[in-house]
Image (tube, one colour):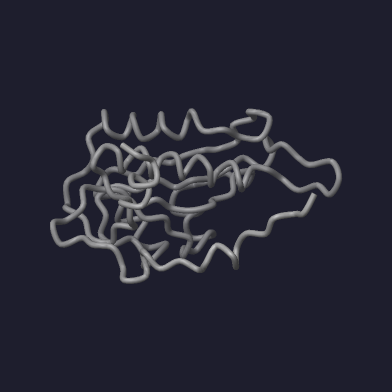
Length: 172
């Protein structure tokens, strides 16, 4: 499939069937993230898989944006394992975790699994509910599951600013 079409067809799913993902499907999604590029290949990502009714109930205490998904993954990074830019101390780990999550979302889409990236969560509540160590920073939650037959993209899904507003070319 053409990648642009494939990526355009993927949308943030906010309505799921209630079936938990099978281990084989989860393993493939995790592999998609595992092979993602990271700064100096340090691989600081840490992923917490939530695939039980009990774990999803705990997640509901941390975010209103759970969309009643049957499965989720909390994407974290280990602050102590990040590549650090020497000029200003910027860490690659938050970017690395985001690249890993993007690979996972696209892998999920290739398997017929819907996903939605959630940044609206209480980090301290998440840390407490799931005993996330202090050296780990939660970047996002990926809700995951088989899309409900009524699932559809939001109206804004295909609305983009003109590239002339987001891209500049340097004159050489």
